[in-house]
Length: 353
Image 1: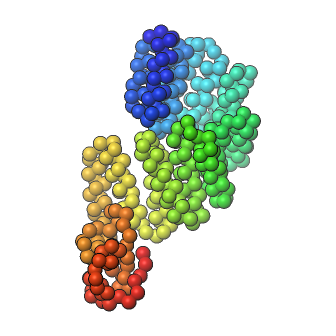
Image 2 (image 1 turned 90 degrees about the horizontal axis):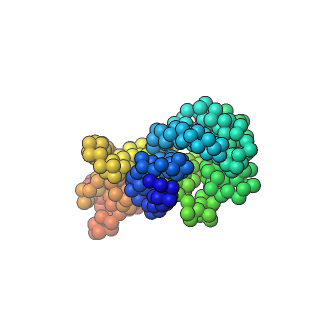
Image 3 (image 1 turned 180 degrees about the vertical axis):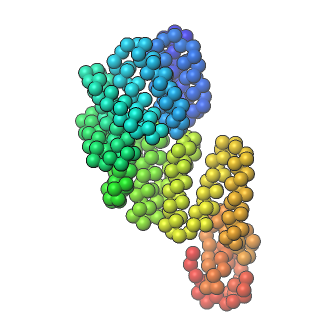
């Protein structure tokens, strides 16, 4: 496969990927990697594979392609390519929580000053280093790196980098328990997505919504937290991003724990896991969570006393009577009696769920 054909196939893969046909795009790029004789084309397609696997949360595969890209850059003997490949190696290790390695590779990138690419990538290098310092709980150095990355973003009018830095700052302020700032920065990221992110990956929207959900929960704004977390989970499911799905599940559990409805939290957890495994066609795990869901419903004894259907499986309006029996609101409205269908006690005023 020659240079022109390699370029055409890479562009074909990008078109498929932007059309959300991820697996087809990956197959096209893998064929290019196997058949192309153009080293620069191979370097570029490796970059596409690294980005795609990063967005899907397949971090071990991301690292594997980053290592191959380093070898390709050395073969090309081009310092610009080498700088870019070291950044991808740093980002891969950051995602795998190998924070000391991340910092080491970032420092290598920063030491390669003078190349065209190094000047363009310094903001991303500072961001990755900041995330690594945050992972190690070295907060002062993390903040210094984030502020440096933000300056690069502003100086170069790089809205995408600014969005990523704002999400990281949201995580930073959550960890040091300044929850107002923890909300401010992901809200700013969400504004950037709305204003400039038409051609961006949906991952940016998902991450801003997730960090907003965490901050809202910490501030006690649980309804807002739930809305943001559901939006993030929807995108994570669409992209097959399992690490983000796991973060959203934890956030859902925290929201329900904050509401002190632990059992309802378990119901939500089993429902979401069922959707994930149904999408992945993993039948054994799917059956396990369906069984656990129904066991959870039975333990809670949440059934409508009129129609007999379980409560909590679907999004229905509920009503509790003063005797503490639960019913679907629509069932009560069609009951035609003022008494509780279960215990026959008269209900003068309904309770509230």
